[in-house]
Image (cartoon, rainbow, N blue to C red; front, side, top):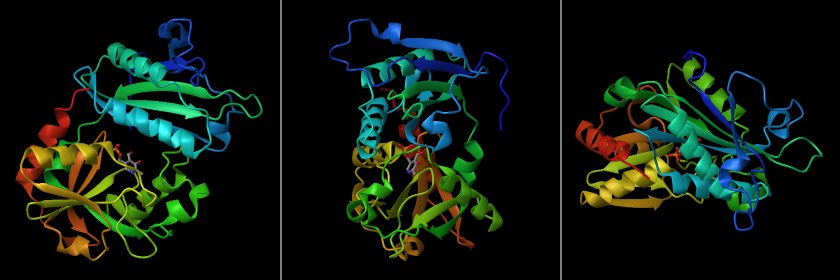
Length: 301
Ligand code: PLP
């Protein structure tokens, strides 16, 4: 945990986060309120607090510019649809993100966008945008991390068979996504790759999985109840720009052992290579790691 001097974390509350952008009469700024991040602002009756019933996005900002902002906003809207929440006002969230970045004193920050179902019975969603400094991930990116595979307990087609389980939505219910880190630690590892019950590679608890086979790069297809990663999409842009091929498909778990490199990708860490999988040492392509990282960090939106 990092400690923050007072006033360096930025919190902006969105008044009416589901307001209709087309019929808004007041300027966007009139719906945004910067408040002290150390004060209390959310009710203990908020369904985001009591049930984890809400959605979020986390994005990275580099030198004052948000990365892949539009894909993050689109995914927020998609999560809202999957949870039968009102559509978030993307104009308002976009404005709040730019505001939070402008107010934040750090060159490298993460920005979190949150929308909850609001106070039980009140019928209004709660929304905020929060920015803070991020740690330095240089060591993990250069040395790699130790990963274990864990059973996700769902088939790969869970999003089609059982959409009410909300797999593929980025909900605030991340207790499981956190518990698996404790399980990873018990097994002497740093992170996790989820496998479907029927043996396919899915994603990490906070990341996408990318595999390298020579000049060909593969990620699990995103209709398997997993998130479409914005960092992974940027990695595939890097592939295209450099003459490599890339593919979304089903990835049987045994292909992990055959891959030349495995990376976990996510907005704030960008990419980290896997140097040990289920206790077995692995090599990875340090050159591609460095070049892809440069591309990922170069995103401006
Ligand atoms: N999958 C899950 C479950 C995540 O929580 C995240 C990000 O936190 C990702 C994938 C990667 O998505 P992105 O690259 O957009 O950060």
